[in-house]
Structures are given as C-alpha cells and as structure tokens.
Length: 454
Image 1 (cartoon, one colour):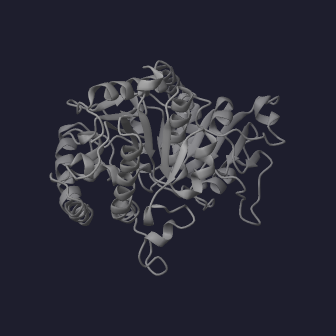
Image 2: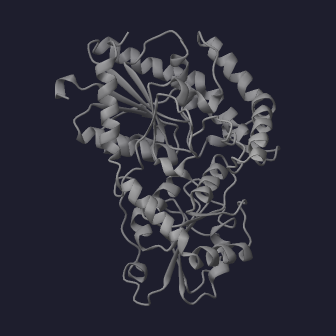
Image 3: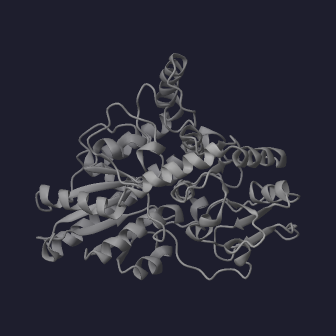
C-alpha cells in the first residue's frame, strides 16, 4: 500500500499495563511501516505512547483512570469485601468497563470528528482493545462519525458461545462429553439470565441512550460478532475449537519475542541464570503487573522450593521499584528483581509459575516453557483452563496455593516431559505466524473495502 493511501490508525486501549502493552507493541510496528498512528488511552501512558512515535490522545472523563485510581470506580470500596469467583469478574466488568462506555464512546466520537474535520479524505481504521467498550455502540447503529473499519485485538481468551464450549466468564473446564454438553446448557442459562443480569441491563440501557439501533449481544461476545475483524492474538491450538466461527475472526499469532517488553538493565546476579554454571533448573515466578500481594504466590513459591538445591527460583515482581514486604526472607536459591522482561527471563526458564495473565501465558508458550497457573481474578481461570486443556501446564484452581501444592505442581511438570514437549510444539506453531504482517494485511483489506469516513 502506497504511503499516500495509508489509512490513519487509531488505537483505543483500557489504561492498564496488560492492555496498553500489547497494543502499543502493535502500534510501534505500524509506525515503522509508515502508518500515521494515534493512540488513545489513560494519561499515565502519555510518555510511553509518544516514545513509540505515535500521537497520544487522552481518554475523557472517568475513562481516564489509572492503576492508582481504579478503586475509585467501585462503590463502597472501604466497606464491602470484593466478590469472589465469577462474581468478581462481573463486578469488575460492571464498574471498570460497562459504566465507562459513555465516556469512552464520547472519546471515540471526538477523535473521529477531529480527523473528519481536519482531513476529510483520509481513511481511518480503529484498532481496539477487546475490553474497550466505547467503540461498540457504533457497531450497533449509534449515530455519529464512523471509521472505515474497526478491528478488535483479542488480548485475552476468546469468548464465543457453542454447545461444547463452556460459557465464558465462569472459569469452567472444557468438557465436550454428553454430561459436559448438558452442564454447558445449564451454565449458559445461569450466566446469561442470572449472573450477568445487572451487566446486561446496564449495557442495554447505555446503548439505547447512545442511540444504538440494534439490541446488543452478550457483552463478552460483541466484539467478535460485530467487528469488521477480530484478530485473536494467539494460535488456534491455544483456544477451544469452534465449529462455526464468525466471519470476523482471524488468528494472527502472538507478539514475537523482542516486541513485548521494554528493555531494562540486567540485575547483578544475571549470570546465575544466563550462564548457569551450576546447571540448575530455573523456575520463574511472577504475579503480573497489577497484583502486588506477594504473599499469594511469590513468597509461597520461594518457600516451597527453598530446600531444592538443584533449583534456582527467579522472582519477577512485575513493576519498576516493586519490593517484597519488609522482613521477607529470600532463600539462598532465589533471585529477586523488581521487573524483568519475560523475553529476557523465559529463554533460560524450565517452568514458569504465574497468576494467569494472558500476556505471561503467551510469553511462556512462545519460548516453549510449560506453565503453572494460580489465578482466580478476571479472566485468569479461563487462561488456566486453556493451558491445562492444551497440555502445556497445570491449573492450580486457586490464587493462594500452599507450599505443598506448589511443590507437587513443580515436581509434576518437571517430572513429565510431555508438558515441555507440548509447549515446544506450540512454540513451533507460533513461529509460523508473522503477527505484524497479518495485522497489516487486515488493515489494508479494510482500507480498500470501505467507503470514506462519514
């Protein structure tokens, strides 16, 4: 596609590291391909976005939150205990995503109107984080400026209903047996009519107020059902098979190594794993970027493996400046850093223990490393179930595993070569996908197929 005919690309992302990270990696690559890129997210990410060569635009109103202010979005945060299980996901969806749709949508319309006014002949393609609902009303007939194409990027498990697929959001394992099909039928009814009833009601009300002409679908499935393209950023073997996928769905593989994490100076002990003169087994552990209660997984992992002389535990705390609680005992066979890019750590790792973030999951498999997942928040049970189903790791079904559970899980994965073998098979499958070129191809197809900006 010639430079003069390239569309303007506008990225929209929920303002959280696990969302901005993968989208900004795509945006950075699009900049190198000569696209003009506008990136819309929270103000705390302005310097990061400008650093990749994109134009930064802030989200408007309450949508412009940060990890430091996210609790202000919830009512009764000082008195009400957080929900557990699937109710926790519903709670987060309602207050972090659904109730922010009006301000997000206002932002989308403002950005589109600005481009239309300044450069009416330029085509515009939106690239939208799966969790960002502000673009969805356009797909359901809401009035206002429209882009020439809308691409959603699937940076979380694929939520798509089918009789043999467990309903997304409940954290249920895959079971295509007759009993599993009956279970799924009952659980879909429970999810849609009871568990998500308040979410569904708010979505319908908001869409109606924004002028949508069509009844919204189930919230987790709207992007894949209605967008021009839904690009799932993984490989088919990491997702449950679907008999009749919607026409928008494409698998584009995971972000390639070297394009996901910012570089960082290595800690002083880095040769302990990079050289590994003692030829020890390397166990990596991280709780991601948002969970800083290190007593849940990181500290028990160090304790569980403290007496294993042949193991070296590498702890990545997930954020610059993060430290373990005062008084935490770090065993002799553990190394701790505030932040280690996974693409630096995982080439040396034999098994990776994580709380189930989708990015860490993809990182691990892209390096052929089997995984142990201990997570219950948000979509983490869905990630854990898929990892176990795909044969690349274990789902501990808790976010606070005991020392004994961690010991047994590590022994199981290290003692069964099939986990490593399967992870390496899927690593090879990932290597067959040129993710950025596939994304570019879909952008170019939409830019050539749609009418100018209305």
